Image 1 (tube, rainbow, N blue to C red):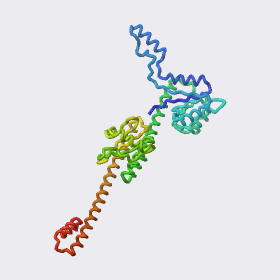
Image 2 (cartoon, rainbow, N blue to C red):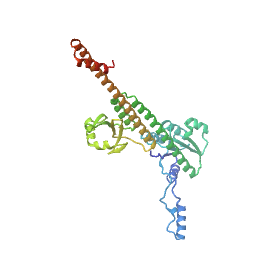
Image 3 (cartoon, rainbow, N blue to C red):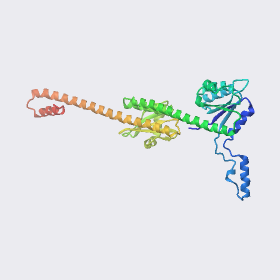
Image 4 (tube, rainbow, N blue to C red):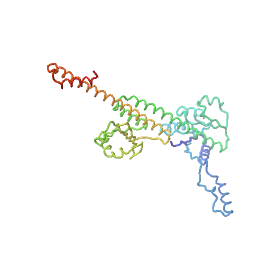
Length: 361
């Protein structure tokens, strides 16, 4: 998951907000004066260059900074960022910003559209008690109040700590959503009562968990040496069949979830069933926890496939046994009728005896 380092600075004085923006942009960069002194010292000592004098080196965080001169403008920026799926992690706002909204109203309105943003209120005046600010804005654990003047190091540390806090909490929110989604998908798979419905439920669950729309699921026919399409979503059946034919060898060799030609191939196996799902537009996450949950979903699908397949075999065997018993019973009845008029036929007697043995009589 890409880290969010977007910061919004709100101040009615352009020079102040630009100065604060420059402070954050230069966070972690080497001090030019110190670098020059180190370079001179290195030359005096006969060295080519001191390692510390490399001005291009930058191990500090790189922030994406936006600025706004008024609260109303900042509110629109935050709202647009949410709508575009690129929210700000932190907002620094001044308290007094005439003639528009003050910092309290600005922060309150921002909190209404973004409950997760970290808010820092900066002021040189005690316009409001901190208790009032917390009550009005809400979510006090995501609110800080600092007084001017402040040191550059304070801003550096706040930006670093709060963006890290935002990203950690966002990761936890994402993991919670993945887990909730996994539970829903597993329930859908577990609710299947036969192999046919299981394939459809499995494909739908895999699409849902990977936030995809297009995919198919097929079973390997060992006798004909071909893949048999069992279900597909949002694609033409002819296209699905062509894919199975063109990629038959690749699908057969897939032994674990893998990416091939932009598609995710997910093998599914039971005792005598080899199946595979192909997800065309899967959106995966780099977080190892996501892959663990995905693997768990595949494992549950495999287990259910094994269970349902075994049950259907037993049912099929039971049905076949019942059919054969019915045939034997009919033969016995005909033999008994025939025996009434041909009592001296030993072969007919043997048929009746064998039938009784099979029928358990």
